[in-house]
Amino acid sequence: MALGTNRRGMTATYDLTGTVPVVEMVQEDGKFPAVPYALASTYCSDYLAQLQRAAAFVDRAEVDRAAQVLTNAYVRGSTVFSCGNGGSASIANHLQCDHLKGVRTGTDLVPKVVSLSSNVEVMTAIANDISYDDVFSYQLESQSRPGDVLVAISSSGRSRNIVNAIEWASLHAVRTIALTGFDGGRVRDLAEVPLHVPCHNYGVVEDVHQALMHALAQYVRQSHMTPATLESTTF
Image 1 (cartoon, rainbow, N blue to C red):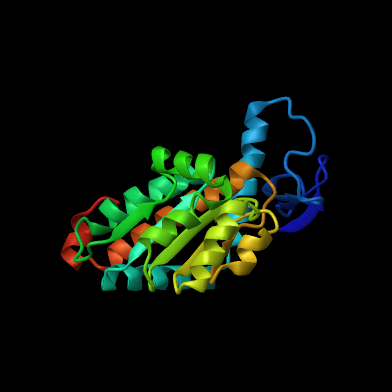
Image 2 (image 1 turned 90 degrees about the vertical axis):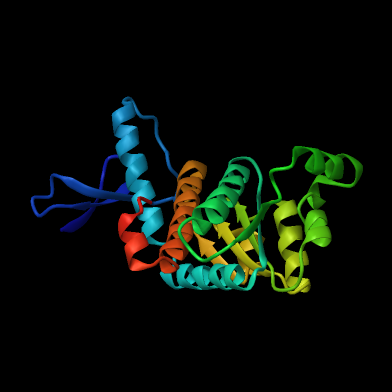
């Protein structure tokens, strides 16, 4: 294998002949895409290469820490809250599904999981009457207890309502896990357990966040299954 720079200014790994790109790495300025693509197939190939690279750079030690925080919460009956905006809101809502129904099925765990992004009526009431910056922290004030966990999802790491939620949680003994991208922003700095995706493409960051959400749910689930149940279960 050898490293080289292709025609789009991206660092790539090549086979020994120097002609076949094996894994196309990040563009030198960190931006993808940086030039127009004529073919969807080429864009797709490069997008998937970006996805592979971004996932590879997630700190696995932090993944282990996140799994331990979540497992401890589920075992002791604490509540895990999730939140996010836009695409991150969909991941937060999906987390409630997979970490509640998914983790419980076939195990001895009875997870308590709440997405703070799922109740449109509550969110719009807080946003309209108080501030959109407080749509998550306000809900935490009413529903969380010390020892609970907040999983905050923000690609940019700069969303004010996510920052406010993590700041409030940290001050009230609610443990925090953050899924971030780009440079991580304030959210990465504040989180007890930062799961950071070093990529400057929203789609890639969200794809890796979704994968991390799934991997954590499945890891916790299989850890609390009997060998016979694990063998007979399709994940």
